Length: 587
Image (tube, rainbow, N blue to C red; front, side, top):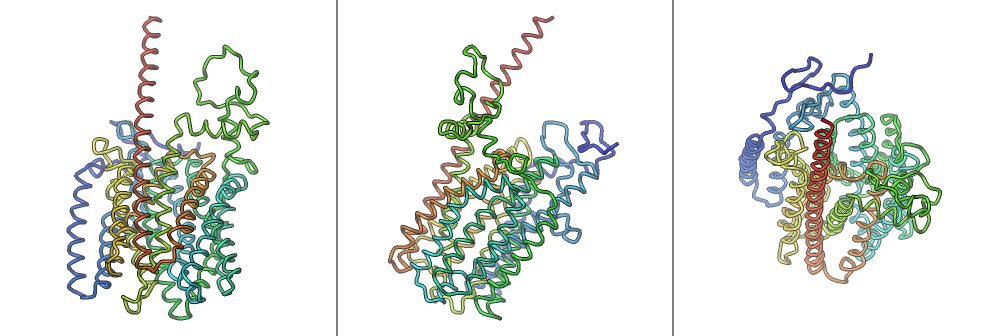
C-alpha cells in the first residue's frame, strides 16, 4: 500500500508519521520584530566597521553592502546556510508549517519530504546556472561595444534590437513552450545564448545585431519556461502551495549569489584575457546548461498537459461561451451555469469572433487581477531594464579611477541578495502571510507595495543632476535591493494568480507589453543626443515615474482581490443560508 501524500493532523492528536511539528511561536509578529531589530543592530555595526576600516566611499559601499548581506542572510536564511552541505536548501523549515492557520495542518510524509527536497534541488541547480549565464554578460556588454568604437546611440540601437526581438518573440515563445514542452524551451535558451556570445567576437554591426536578436529570443524563453516548468511540476506532484514561496525566496537569494559570482568571474576573466574572455566563459557555461537540463529534468510538461496542444487554445475554447460560437446551440430558457463559463471544445475557437471574446472572458470572471498584475510587472521591469542600460555610463565617467565593472556589478547583485533576505524576514517563515492577525508576518502583496515605493523614491533621488558617481553607486545598490524584494514577492503572487494551463503564454504576453515600454524608452529619451550628465536625470526620472505607475497598478490589484474576496464571501453566505433553509424545510 503506497504511503499517503499528506498526513493530516488533528488539533489534539499528533501523527507519528510527521517528521516535524508546527512551531507556532516562530510565526508570530514578535519573531519578525526580533529579527528586524537584530538585523538593524548588526547592520549598524557593519556600517561602523566599514567606515573605520577605509576612508574611500566606494570601498565603504562595497564593504558595507557585503557585510550587510551576510548579516541579513544569516538572519533570514539560517537553515539555508547550515544545510548547504546536504543541499536541502532549507525546505525543512516548511515541513510542518501551516497551509491555513485556521485549519488542521498538512504535514509532508517522510517519502514526500525527500521527494520535495530532490525536486527543489534539481530545479535550483538548473535555474541558478541559467541565471549565472544570463548575468555573465551584464558587466562588460556595454564596454565591449564601446571598445568596438560604437557611440552611445549605436549601443542603444543594439540594446534596442535585443528588446524588440524579445517583444516580438515573446508570444510565440510562450505558445511553443506550452505546446512542445517547457524543458525544451529552457534548452533553446541555452543554445541561443551560446550562439549570441560567439557572435560577439566579430566587430561587424550586422553580426552584433544578429547576436542581440538571438539574445532577445533567448530571454523570452528564460523569463518564462524555467518558472513555468517548476510550477507545473510542483502542482503535478501535489506539493503544498506554501512551498512555492519557499522555493521562490530561496531562488532569489541564490540568484544573488550566482549574480555576484558572475560579476567576480567576469572581472577575473577580463583581467586575464580581455573583455571577450568574459563572453567565452558565458558561452561555455551556456553549452554546459544545455547538457545539464535533460540530465536533471527528466520530466517534461506542457500548457495543456498534452504535447502539441497550446494551453492558450484550450483556455480560449473553454472560456468562449457556446452562445457566441453558435447561438442556436443553447436553449433560450437555459438556466445560468454555476461553473465559471467552461464549455466543450469548438472547431471555430480561433475565428475572428471567438478569439477576442474568449480572451475577454478570461479577463472577466474574476481574472482582471491578471491584467493589473501584468501591468505592475511591465512598468516596474521596464524601468529596471532601462536602468540596466544607464548604470554603466553613469558610473564609468572617470570620477572613480580604475573602476572594475565586474566588482561594481557584484556589489549591485549583493543588493539583490539583501532584498531577498528582507523579503523572507518580513513575510515570516511561511511566506503565505495573511497579516499580523493570521500569523506569518506580512503578505507578499504588502511587501511588494513597499518595494515599489522604495524603488521609485531611490531612482527619483538618483535623477538629481549634481550627484557624484560614488553616491550613485550607493543609490543603485539600494535600488537593486528593492529589485530583490520585488522578484521574490512577484514570483509568489504570479504563481497564485496566473492560470496554470496558460502560464508561459500569459507571462510572455506580459513581457510583450514590458518590451514595448522598454523600446519606447530606447527610441525616445535614451537616444537623445545629450551628454550623460543631462541624459541621466531625464532617463532615471522617467524610470521613477514608471515605478510609481506600477505602484498604482499594484494598488488596483489589491482592491480587486479584496472586492472579489468580499463577493465570494457573500456568495458563500447565501449558499449556506439556502442550505440551512432547505434543511429546516426537510425537517
